[in-house]
Length: 219
Image (tube, rainbow, N blue to C red; front, side, top):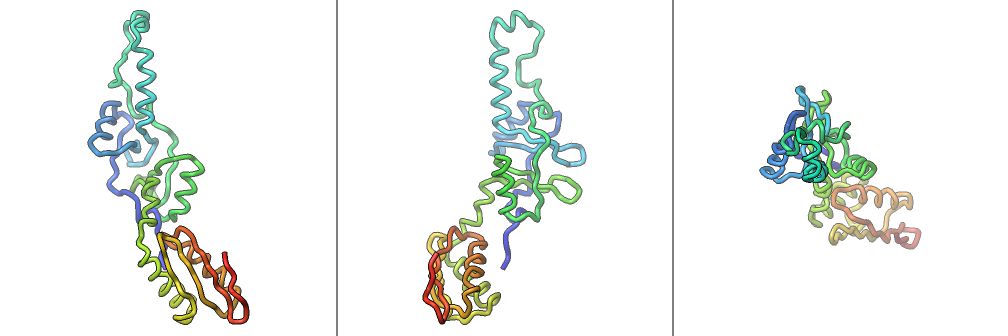
């Protein structure tokens, strides 16, 4: 069995900004590429921050107050237009990053704990190699039921646990796995259930497995 990692779902061709990239240039990157955030990288390609749409909106909102006629009269030499703002002044820094070999669960936990929508992915040298978003982490759940059932039946039950082909009956409906049948040892039941839960695309596992000497138990 193979478990997906960040490198399996991340975007590799990442649109980036530099420290000196202006407000308008970043807004143009968002518009042309259909994105809502860009990592900011240094001269060695290492992420030093990230600028999102929220950062641009926040900056624009602050400029509205400065644009009031009274403010202009009091401060006639101030610059009011957004072109003067650069990425280094708007970015969130330091930036939280991920590694390509992280499991999707690891990435999801970091996003949830830090309340982030995306994570730049770095290589061993700390250089940007991709970016992963919350929608990327949901890709495994788009997997069809037939392929999930095939992996459980053949890769897990037959090839890994060496169970008889007719020992466990597997059905999958919208990612929900149902297991029925009997196994030789009761200790196998939580192992089977746990392994099924860990597979890509599995939403839940419902089992009524028993052993040859006991009545079925359900979860």
